[in-house]
Image 1 (tube, helix red, strand yellow):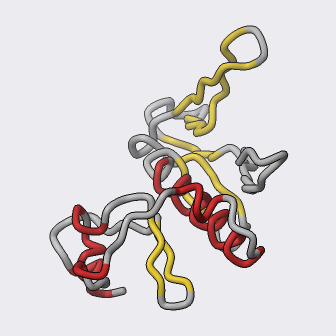
Image 2 (tube, rainbow, N blue to C red):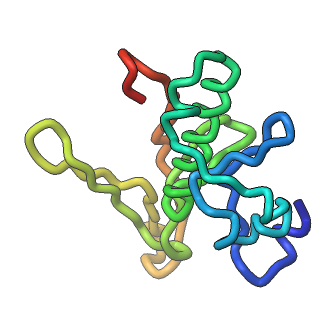
Length: 147
């Protein structure tokens, strides 16, 4: 693992190694992952070959890879709390409020996910910063052949 972290390029963790096989949706030639695989052994396969495999362990590996890929895609906005076992919104800048906007059924919805409270006695001093406990958990599974 240190070989991934020691390089000049950002480490990627949207991959897994199961049974000696490297699994990833991204080409290891184009990332720091090239340092942990034999590039001449890299073989691209169709996603459907592993997404709809007969072996349940292979399907579990695929679901794990999907979750790791989603983790990688949202890493700028969300962080994982190992202690609380949940995702939380990262602050954009130090002591700066942050809102999150999404599409809700018929209109856009917005909520403050990082709240900065100033002291009542001195409006130039921060009393505390609260990161909203927006619980995010994603499970990956297939329903009627659709992931």
